[in-house]
Image (cartoon, rainbow, N blue to C red; front, side, top):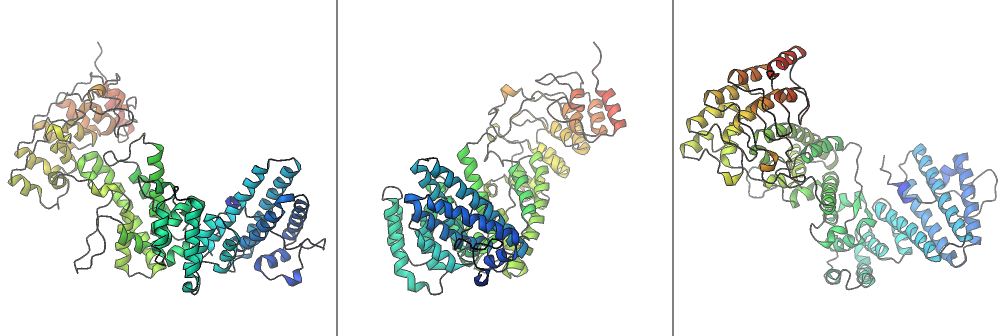
Length: 593
């Protein structure tokens, strides 16, 4: 079944061809009913009664319309055509059509009633003009939305109006949906030149140049679709037929054109939107090192939303365009080389800390699920071979994320990935430094190795410092405790790790403020506090056996016992059983003074 576009938002009112004579039927002669909508109204007594109400309201409105008579007649007549687009295409289920037409009746009756009340109440003429213009714009948008599905009807609507948006729509329809576009070439160029004049040379000066450079193709329409902006909704089928039009939906970041981006609703019932949304939510929860700050401005947030919407539409309607025209760190090659997949979003970011790597495992798993589902969708709807569908799904899901361009040092990758090239052994043999310079503000290499403990021994053999700290004053031992790694923790203790070191106080951490990527409120933590909040009983006991002190307090006054029971910055320890929790509570209770 075809998609219904947003009828309630458009408020398309049901027009009436004439004032009815019958009292039990609609306002028109059912013997002459030709369109699917008219036939449906004749078959549905409730719709017929509503139609009579509409006819009566329309007649009474015309009787008092005064100088607005002709505009109201045009609006009503064009509305009827637009209603055929929204509710009357032939493949619509009868029950769905009845609901659609019924909603349209109700919306239109309310609109006509409001206009009558305004005219009778002496409403300001400018307000009436504004309301009529708004209804006209919604009808024009209806023609934009369905021009590929019903070209003749959409063209007739767009010809009836003379606004810039209608002219842009008519040019688009004549060029892209007519059977013989060449016949309309001169008219399309005239329309585009008129749009330039309508907007004025100072409003969008680049349009004049684009109008003169018109090549008679879809690409030449894109600047005009941009200035029509989000007042128009492009046809999804039009995007299928002309994927280059996706460029009109792509916001020009940091330019004025970003404010003028058309919309498009390209939803298919079998498109895996839920799986993709879950993946996007996982990615969006992490900033990848500062790209999206928690207190980002509204402009940045809006542009992010535009880019997300663009990628979603492109994935649905124009996979070839997206895969071949965006920079995703990979793509089609024409030199015979095997295709190399681009990085999964946040993949490079994941090599910057053990915490990042843990979060990335979940992101990657969801990415793989979404890729499979999108690839299957491409095979069904675009008849793609399986391997091409997989490539396009992989690239398109990666598109739009700056994370692919975040780089991580080779040694970070080698520590966390046993299959990395160059390997950790190769790097250490070449004398790769094992102490991170303070100015790089990175994690100690032994902290990274908590994600793959097999890397710890070679790093220690190369004299990696076991008590090194990251910019927050966090040691490898604290990281091992946080990630419940008894193997890493025991090795660090044997190597001389200091068990009672405290991390930095919040006011001593550089760039630690509310809108920073990481805002630390509880500083001066110990490894025992990290273990109490996150680790199993063996890790807690190993720290205590090594001399960990239960008495220190963090910068907010919380002890390790408080961390165990959720009175610190994180919830209560989630890995302990009730019996283990009682044992841990006894072990972590500071001695009485």
